[in-house]
Length: 169
Image 1: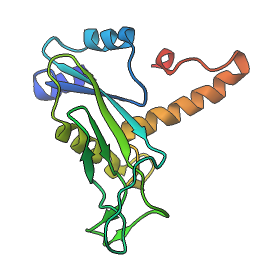
Image 2: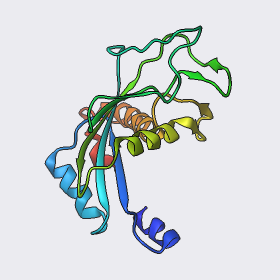
Image 3: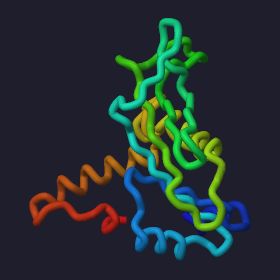
Image 4: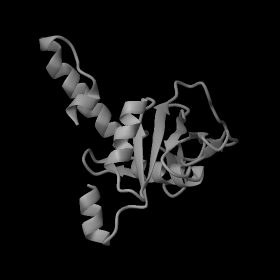
């Protein structure tokens, strides 16, 4: 991937965001940093669905507007990736939407602005061309890894239980 980026842009990426639903241990984090080019800022971001522990309501017939964010501090924010879409004048969903909990866990050089992280995540939830989903609640990076993990767990169950996801990539 990094080589493909370099071929297209004649330089390595300035930042490389790694999305996950869990924290990265030191061994994983050090491997990510070693794999990235020297000047590339590697950023680890945890993206977790919430089970309704945070709800946001607004006046009117529709729920919170898709893309609403509530910054808790410079590393943590709630992000509503589903909700009312003004351009469509509707909400595609059966109940009050739950936000994602977004946490900037680590960065190799400098911590990025939370607005940049949230904007990128919103872009990755807009449309999933692989499944024709519009307005998917999870970014495609997390959704795809979750689907691959489900397949791997099912396939390895016959032979001594599931292996950690990191062994398959």
